[in-house]
Structure formats: structure tokens, C-alpha cells
Length: 482
Image (cartoon, rainbow, N blue to C red; front, side):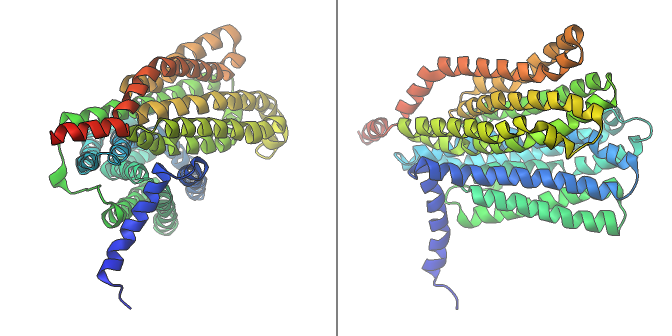
């Protein structure tokens, strides 16, 4: 039976209304579960896929192929950051406008300009980055650190990935826009769909057609194309305000400035993260394979609580932005408080359990006595760093949600700027222990910097809340009527 026209039209509106309810008036606990659990689940699914992908490549029994993916990983992170510039900045602005539209409905009219600028801007920027990378492919592969044996496979992998940069950037951007409307479950579905498609493509291109790393890169690109199609279809059917039509693309300052102001921090953070990993790996390698292997195992174990915490700090961003745009001080503070308690609870329970049983956990990954001995210390340092990183990430989300561009950029840059001198000094003064604890010290300092900037920014945030309050909205409407 075919649904009546008014019923089919009502379904998307109902879906959008439910998602908006989570942002606007749902109990904070329910809102956090709705927004944060899918985010964490999607990140864990992505981590599991990385392991599966490495297994597919490893089945080819060619070490150079595995090395090529390792060398290409930093580039993939930087590419995703291009989408983050537009997606995180655009998503935060969309959530603020949705909140402001509760009192002044006309504010929602700007959302179609923001969404069109974000999506098409990410695709164009991705095309520029991808084209430049292909033109400079050989020096780029050298810069990534590929040696003579791995260079051909790395060039093959990187070339295909660069060709798909516009798709990868647009996919990441669209995910943030979907989240901005409170549709966290749909964002998770898109990411899981991408992961499943990626596994299918890996089977076809790697196991059946024996395309090696080129097949892996092609599978990633096509899976992200599936994601773009899914998100675009969902937004078209369910979003009342978002539009991806090129005719709404604009370079107006009230769109470009807030998007870039928040989004540039994502690009800087990814760039500094790549530098941090390269410096850390090179210094650790100087002490032999044992510490380097132990560091790799410890990082993967610490990722479990880290992903859950990131699910909270990133998932709560639309809720904070919506409450700020609406001028709802009580809801903003309640969301911050509940998020901080959740971050602390995750680390107390899960992080504490990993800390207490770290020897037993490490034994499941390696039986090498040298790896286990140093791994216990590295895992302890990683877990402590995760605590500070979780609260620092929550502060960063607050800055992004409230449009505080300068402190958001400082938070994104602080880790990279501080880590390099700290790890070099730690290596010189304390040797390997100095390297192990350098990230912990850095994350602690970043959190203190963030806390200081948060205290300094509170008056400005309070003024922004007052601007979005119902009283101020009523005053604006009266002035417009007069």
C-alpha cells in the first residue's frame, strides 16, 4: 500500500523533530547517550576495520605492502583534516543557528548557505590538495619516510588515495553536518556502512583481483563514495534546513569566517599530530625494536578508553553549540558537567582496570619479556595522558561550540608545539623514560592551558548566551517590528 502524501512528508519531519528534541529539551543523560554512544561505536568500528584491513594486506605475504600503508597513514589523517576544516566549523555553526532559530526562526535561513559552503568547499579544497599531491608524488613519498624497498608500493597507495581526496574530505564534512542536526545514529550508520563497504571492496580488489595496496586505497575511496551518497540522500529526505545545492554556495564573511575560525584548528591539530608521531617513533627507534613495539601495543590498548572519551567530547559538541545558540545557560552548563563526569567515570572504571591489570593485558599481545617490561610503564603513561587529553578535548569542544576561534586554535596547536621540545629535552635528560612520559607531561600542560583560557573566556561566553536568550530575541523582534 502506498502511503498518503501527507504521511510520507510527515515522516522526515518527525525524524528531524526527534533529533532536534535531543538537542533542545531532552534530559541531559538521554541526550548524551543519543549523541555520544553512536560516535564512540563508530570510532571503535573504524579501529576494528584498520586491523582487518591490515590482515587483508598481510595475507599477501609482502612486508613492503604493510609498510606502504603505515607510511601512507599520516597522509590519510591530513586529508581527513581538510574535511574537518569545513565539517567541524560548519557543523558547529549549523547547530548554533538551529538553537538561535528557536527564538528567531529566520536565523535558520542561513543554514543552507553554511552547508553548501562546507560541502562544496571541502570537495574543492580536496581537489586542490589531491592534485598538488599527485604533481609532487615522488618527493611526497620520500617525505613520508618510505625506504627504497617500500617506495614503489607507497607511491601506488598514495597516488590512488590522492585521487580520492575530494571524496574523502566531503564524506568527513557531511558526517559532521549530519551530527550537527542531532542525528548521531544516522551518522554512525553511515560510518558503519562505509566500513562494511570497505571490507567488501577489500575482498574484491585485494583477495580476488590481487591489486595489493592500490586495491586497498581504491576500496577506501569507493567506500567513502558510498558514504557521501548515503549522507546526501539522508539530508535531502530528512533535513528541513540543510541544502547541498551549489546555488546556495556563498563566500559571505558571516559564513566563511566562523567556519574557518573553528575549522582551521582541526587542520593544525592533525598536522601537529603527524609531526608528533614521526618524532616519537624516530626517538623510540633509537633504543631498539623492543621499546618501539611496546609503544605500539600500549597505544592500541589505551585507544579503548580514549575512543570512548572522544565519543563523549566530540559527540557533545552539537548539544553545546545548540544550547549556546539558543541562549540556554542552564542546559549548556548541565551538558558540560555531565560530560566531564562521564569522561572521569570512563577513566576511573575502564582506565583504572587497565592500569591495575596492565601486565596481564600486555601479555595477551606479546610474550617478549623486553616488550612486557617497558610496556607496563608505557601503558601507565598513556593512560594518565588520556585523562588529561579527555578533559582538554572537552574544553576544545566548548570553544568550538561557542565559536571561540582563537582559543580553539591554541588548543589544537598547543600539544604539537609543546611536545617536541619536551620530548627532546626528556630524551636528553632522562633517556627512554623521558620519551615515555613526554606525552603525559604535554597533555597535562595542554589541559592547564585550556582551563586557564576557559576561565578567561567565561565572560565572553556569558555575553554570547545573553545574545541568544529569549529576552534578547524578543527585543530584536520588537525592534524589527518598530
